[in-house]
Image 1 (tube, rainbow, N blue to C red):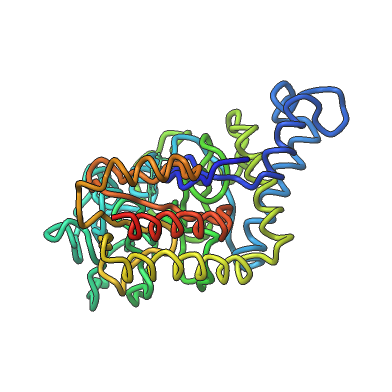
Image 2: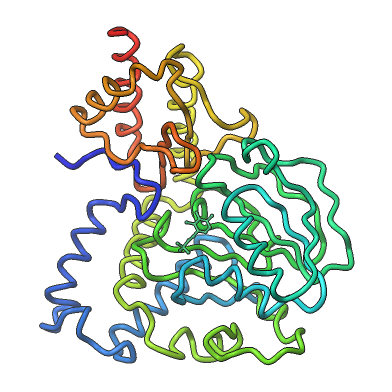
Length: 354
Ligand SMILES: *Cc1c(COP(=O)(O)O)cnc(C)c1O
């Protein structure tokens, strides 16, 4: 049986997506060619790219609202600098809620003045700062919707009328939001959309063209938009598998459906963390992420026993990030409820044994 895969990223994909993807590696579209050996400009692949883009807009409810979809390379980390390169004239506002925001800030500082509107760094990023004031004279405001490493998630986004940029790498397509409130969203595929190798960018075209600096072609959103993500060779296989995964999500009932499942999974694990005296949650309760649940053992001497029990139950990938320690159960869209139940069962069994 397949393992219960709690990996933080690259992470679990639906079994049927993996099956279809593996078939396409051998024979794509019944053309007797592999998806890995055809031109990115061939008709069958252009159709994949178009389908992936339209699924993104449909699932996010952003059709006919001036948004464009890009599938680029370089990971979400390249977006840290690309957003600033394309949008930062003088000043930008950043909310610092974790390692990823911190890295985005570091890159953007190369391009202009940065205002850190709030930060939870002083408390090891265990919470999301509230009541934030964003200056009105900034080119844009940047935030990270879900803090993958520390396990916090923005539940209510700060009010801001200007251009809003959001790193949604670890929770895009997981919950209903008014996505039209964001002007630029980006996400590395490998958390909740597909395999590593491509990065999704959803951008309102109207925010571009406002900086004076010259932008190298590969880092220029406008060029990628004009070339339909085919300015250079896109990550063909990653885009294909992402498309399959988005189709899977659509067939299930889209974000409204998966959000309910994700809420159930999160309630299950957090209830157990709070109930079981052997475990303690890491993040502030009201800011807990529905995607990445972080927790520790209250009695470190049980570490080995817990490890062995998890292993025997087929539970994989729950070790916390090296900067936090403890455990992290990542519960992306493709992780079934029964996998969370399997982990909770082990936590309860540990309590009985201890
Ligand atoms: C994983 C992650 C990143 C980094 O993604 P790469 O594709 O590895 O560059 C950035 N932001 C968030 C929120 C992440 O979870």
